[in-house]
Image (cartoon, rainbow, N blue to C red; front, side):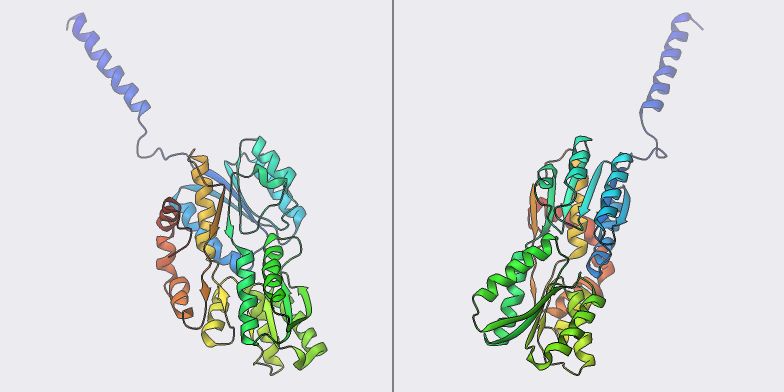
Length: 342
């Protein structure tokens, strides 16, 4: 063999070796994006949303670090510090307190970590360090539910209000919406209002106390979420007071069933798998260098007895099909800027 042929063979072999090293084989999977996701607690709504987050995470090859703060600000701040120390690529926050995490959010942003707020707003100065926020129009939802009670009472009567946790934007905004509607109804009197912490158990206890104190003076109940409405309904049922109208927000399964049966006047569907799944997708897009909106307000349709069955079928009867399609749905939703309008 001539030296020229030997050189040619050597060069060809070297090129093949370089190509084999440079081109990833089937066994070499793409690097996973690491995302920390901290939520205020595992309410019925958040638990529903978690199913959507897991589906989107799997579709996007995300290494998901899920954490519940159990309604403790200090615990959520610690979770934020852990995520930063783990050098995750992005953090999604559904905060316990809208004003509590500014130092941690700033530190994450300074470390080059994308931070996405969801569901509960983050107040200044923390919000200026956010890459994006994905959540509901809670003022509108609060106004709608109060309007429904006012209409049911023909503008006259006494109501009690079950509020969310103090310090959360969802509570602040839903209360603002409640008050805007009630301000226009001079014949409606608020007998009492109290934070029910989004909890069925806490709402049951509060409603039981109110029924002992006010009894038949209560003409209507405004509950700022469906979990608390479910607790209040249980308290009323035990007293045989099943004719007091009640409203809620979120569109969890219990709320949709209560609306369908006529026990609850309305709810506002805050599609948990879609919203939290979309927040995760926005985090993925931001890490990938794509331009993402600074604020996304997810559409919240009003659910009445007339359309409750439709949403029950979509969200629960055919839930597996809905969740299976969710990763492509959130991508289309973001691309078309429809944000939950289906």
